[in-house]
Every structure is written in structure tokens, then in C-alpha cells.
Length: 547
Image (cartoon, rainbow, N blue to C red; front, top):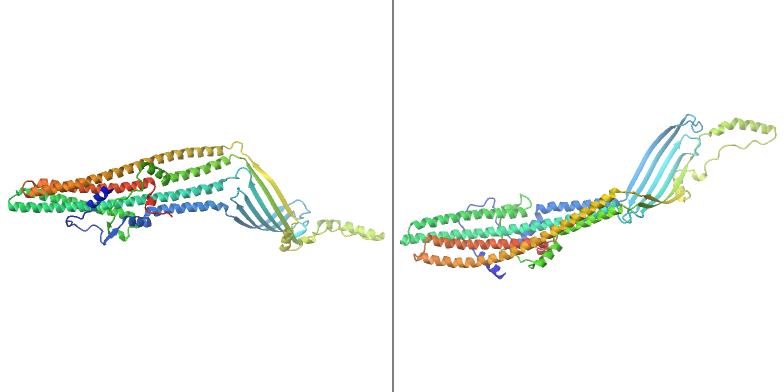
């Protein structure tokens, strides 16, 4: 690393002269804004549109999870109704007109609750009815009826350990974690993009400085040639060669200015929150020029870290866990449905005595009168009245009396039993089990493929680091040698022992060495960013927490 630091310092040496005159860059009207790498990353995380779009996916997954949990929300139902029945009847005792008329007003309430415990479900019903009729045999008219019912159903085999509702919640929870993992992956990608864009801008600005130095060296050589022509030690034709090379370097310099603008806009695209952001009018000046220090350098450690921390691998593991839930549910559906059911209900009744005349009383009245007359002639007492007895007193009253009877517990029903349902073939469950097995095999293949990708990416990044480090050292040595050769060539030129061509060639060799150093540093930092991404250490390296 010592050689790398030396090379960076050499590349960062200020330009030998002022940059050549240039037109203002398009859209740059603000002041130069100094920017560190960490500042660039934080700005990108705060306003990058890619991250905001991905964050909406996480929010959507959270709401889908919340919706799945809603299956355990209690459900309240209220069912009021009015009903009038006109039923034809041939029974003249019920209705001499042949029409049985009934009017019913119902006010029914119910509460249903599915619980997450063993698939148990609870229910409560409170039913109320007021009914009137023209049937003379009904003792209360109108009468009020209330009924309170409690029920419970508990799976004993299928649905005991898992059911569709609980499986859906578990799957949605895994999918939410996958969305969070994908957000982390998107953040890593954006951070890596910002690093690459930042170092591209650093390299573009360094290249512009080198190109400006090349123009300055060309002007020096042109002035040197002019002086020697004036002194008669150099042929005038040599001036054209120096002038042509100067113009070529000016052309290269202007091209580097364009490269700076493009690199700068590439970085702004990641940092700006919208096209109206004031950042677009500023000139960005990166202040970090040193190579990043890789977190890991040893191949085995880097691969192990990548296999443990890569979000892509975590996502596949989460999908595998979700598929395991589906497989468990499919196997559970192969079991018979055996439920324990139990219920308790209590009822209450009240009403007003029916004032309609009893048809039997009218039919027997002549007979009763004749018997009474004969009884008097025979000195016997008349027969007692033959009216039907009315309803018990405890049923007489309004709605309060019905509730009192309901609460008294005299009219109750208790029930219990089991419900058995068995699909002898159940091809649906068999197919679901097979689908889960196929999905599991596919996910394992995807995991192996992703692990191979991690292996390759880590190896490539480490190799890029080694190569870039060697290239920086080579460029440093080349620059030293080129500088010495240029100084020697200039001395020979000044004594008439060299030519313009050789001096310009030596200058180009020096400029080429400096440019190669710039590119080597750029590739080195890119390799560090790729290694962080390959090992899943990007967030840790930059102390980023994804919420």
C-alpha cells in the first residue's frame, strides 16, 4: 500500500500551469461545491429515487402482512329485518279465512372470532324477534323471543398445527423480509453506483489536470522553439511541429472538459432528488483522492463473508422458508378434518295474552248451555267453564321479561359433538405437495447458482485490486523515468543535440504515465467498491443502517 500512496500523491501534484482558456460549462452557474465520498453517499441515500421506489415496495409488503393478520380480527354482524307472511292454509281452526298472517321483526347480532391458537374459532349470537299472528291457538300475541348462543370449534387433526390463515401470515412475513432485503440490495447498488460515479469524477478531473499540464508543456516547448529559431540554432520548420502538437493537446484538453461534465452529471443523477434540484447548477469538487482500504483481502475469508452477508442469498433463504410453510400446509391438508364442536344457548320468551276467541269454545257453547239447563232441572250444578288455560304468568310482559327469562337459565340447550370430513383421494393436496417439492428443488439450484456468483465476484474483485495496485506502482516508476528522460531531452534540445519531435515524444510519454496512474487509481477504487458489494460489506463499511 505504501507504493499506492506514493502514486496517489504523485498524481495529485498541482498542474504545472494555469488551465487553457475554455468556455463556461453548460448549466454550471453556481459556485464550486466540495464533496466527500461519505457526503455523496448520504445525499444519495436521502434523495435517490431508486431507493424511494424500492421503499414503497417495503411499505406495500408491510400492508399486505397487516391485511393477512386481519383474518384474526373479530367480525361483528347486525341483521335487522321485517317480514310479513301470508300463508294459505286449509285448516279453518287456524284461520277461518284460509290465510295465516304472521308479522316478524328481527334484531339479530353476532360476533365471530378466529383465533391463532390451534385453529380454534369462537362465536356468539344474540337473536331477538317480535312476532304477531292471526292464529287463535297461539297463547301470546304478539310475543317476544330472545336467544343467546355461544359456540366453539377446535380442530383435532387437520388445521391444528397450521391452516390457510396462519400459513398466509407466515408467508407474508417472509415476503416482507424479502422486500426489506431487496431494499438493502437496492441501497447497496446505489452506494456502489455513487462510489463508481464519484471516482469517475475524480479521475475525469485528474485527467483534465494532466491534459492541462500537457498544454502547458506544449506551450513551453513552442516558446523554447521560437527562441532557438530567433537565435538561429533551430530551423524554422520545427515551429510547425510544436504548434501542431500544442493544438492536438488543446483538443484533448477540451475533450477532457466534456468528460468532466458527463462524469459530474452522472454523479448528480444519483444525488439529486428531482430535475429542479439546485445541485444541477453547481460544480462538484471531490475532495477524497486516496484509495479505499478493503475490509478483507484474503480469498477464503472474503468468500465466507459474502456467503454469510449477501442480501441475494438471504432472500433465497427466506423464499425457501416460505416454501417450507406452503409444504407444511399441503401435508396438513392430507389429514382428515376432525373438529370438536360445542355450544351453549339460553332462550327467553314474553308477550301479551292472545285476545282472539278460541274456535273450540264457540263450537261447544250450545252443547254446554243444553247440559247446564238439564243439570238445573235435575238439581245438579252447572258444568265448569271449558276455556283453555292461558300461558304461564312468567311469560307475560314486555322485552324486559324476555331478557329476564333468558338470564334465568331455565330454557337452555347444551350440545357437543365432532365433525369428520375425509377426502379419500385428495389429489389437490398431493399436487400442492409436489409443487412445493419442485419449488424447493428450484430454490436450492438458485442458491447454488448465487453462491457460485459470489465466488466469482469475490475472486474478480480481489484480482482487480492486485492488478490495480501493481499498475499504480508501474505507472509511478514509469512517470519517474519519463520525467528524467524529458529533462535530459530538453537539455539536449537546448544545446542543439535533439529535436522538437524527441522533446514532444518525451512529454507525451510523461503525460501517458500520469494518465495511466489516474486510470489505475480509478480501477483500484472501483475494485474496492466491487469487493464490498461482493462480500455484502457495503453497508457496514459506510456505517449505513436500512430502516
